[in-house]
Length: 162
Image 1 (tube, rainbow, N blue to C red):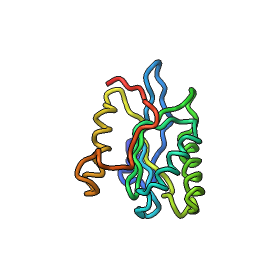
Image 2 (tube, rainbow, N blue to C red; image 1 turned 45 degrees about the vertical axis):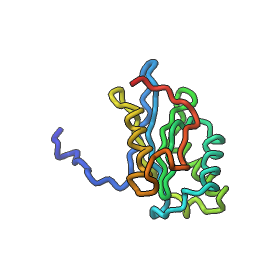
Image 3 (cartoon, rainbow, N blue to C red; image 1 turned 90 degrees about the vertical axis):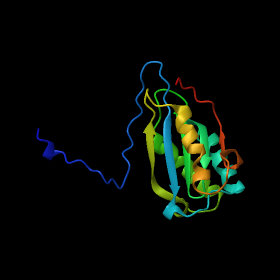
């Protein structure tokens, strides 16, 4: 096969959601970013935060570990609640619709069409990635210290061996 038969796409418009790779006793943790439609800054309110937390508790096929909710996007770490892992795409679709209903916004009005995800690899550090994510509100000028940002937390302890 020639390399030219499979051109490299460097500017993807839609993410490729890879299946979760389970390997022996290794933890499976996925890092995901979900944006609002047109990046409208409507998520960082107590009401939306509560709706998101309730949706994650209801949509229990995946467990949410640490998360940060910014005005126009969410960063979260999640892990399958059971094996074999259920579809991450369906799980995100379900809780996005649940939040939209709870906030009385249409799902197509609140959320962007898709989301980005990547499974942490053996060489990745969950702790280091979390430090980067929890500093997002500081980088965006929303607070001066990460611990001052109200819309963050951890629902489940996701076990990871750094």
